Length: 251
Ligand SMILES: Nc1ncnc2c1ncn2[C@@H]1O[C@H](COP(=O)(O)OP(=O)(O)OP(=O)(O)O)[C@@H](O)[C@H]1O
Figure (cartoon, rainbow, N blue to C red):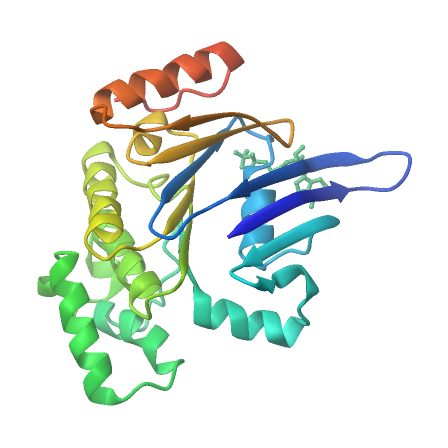
């Protein structure tokens, strides 16, 4: 994915907020990229444009050769369905469907064969360790299990990119850690490309690269080399302390 000089302004001539201000970056296949920044720095606005939910004011976003800023609303909906997977803070599961049905629903929208759907579902339930709760309803399982179900739903159709907005936001520290291990597995074992917005340094330490946003601009980038996650976490905390970013829930 290539993001080229993307801008998003809100308001009118006399009162303009530059929520995202000439942002450019690339995400390579197989990367796990984090976007960090204080409240109001433009993280959600940026994610909404990347996920086709919102339109850019200026600039271009390419997925491969496709410039999504040029697509019609119908073409965008189709593009989203085929290429993107979403994981939100509040799970967004359907309460009247079981865990398995929630996961499978994403596949039926892609009109795949029943047997293929079942095989993929079995595989993913096992991979994310939620096999035992497949017949339960969302209200009968924990927040962490719900979020792993949301991961399974997001990745079952093997999207080009998984977009996650504060996925650990509603979880306690143990469930958050399990979810982040799930992300690591999705990235390492399934080669999923993940872009995660977070203001939690611990969550960000699982990424391979982090972009730091401030006032709608990218002001810093950290790449995790061969160092241990703990060391990477310290580097993230250093950047945040320099910029007065939020240090929520640092474990
Ligand atoms: N619909 C809107 N109309 C006007 N201003 C907006 C709108 N949405 C966001 N903004 C402004 O754009 C800026 C960026 O907001 P955004 O929600 O992207 O930040 P964020 O980094 O995601 O914050 P948080 O971590 O608190 O969710 C803020 O100044 C915000 O007030």
